[in-house]
Image (cartoon, rainbow, N blue to C red):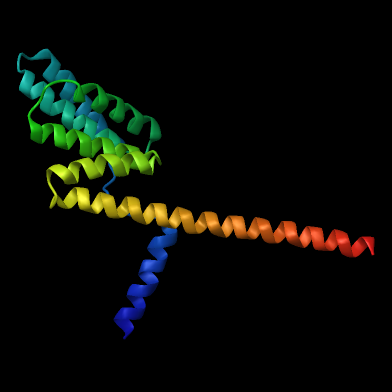
Length: 167
């Protein structure tokens, strides 16, 4: 019984805090990835350059800084046009979905994650992201309804108060 109660309070707490299972990336890792891309650009291996760009894109879309997320999304969108193996295309679409999720565009993120799940229905990362998107949409909807109900209540109270003064 105590376990169920603690799980309930934990789920309520995570509902209002907006926590999710998507990892974050700090600035040090991003800087390391940027150095790796610069080093790979000096070399002859296109494969090494492509891998280092993918790592940098991953780090950027998982950043807490919105400008990093936007930069990662731009890199991914530009690289989607390039021909690459289907698995890498799928990974780019997933990372782009993470970027849209981080930037608050949940509908676009959901579209992209659904595209990933069409290709690989059991992909655990995509399923976790889909659940995080759906939870965030539900939470934002509940909060939005609460704000609307409060605003309507305040307006109705103001009107009632104004009418009672006139009498």
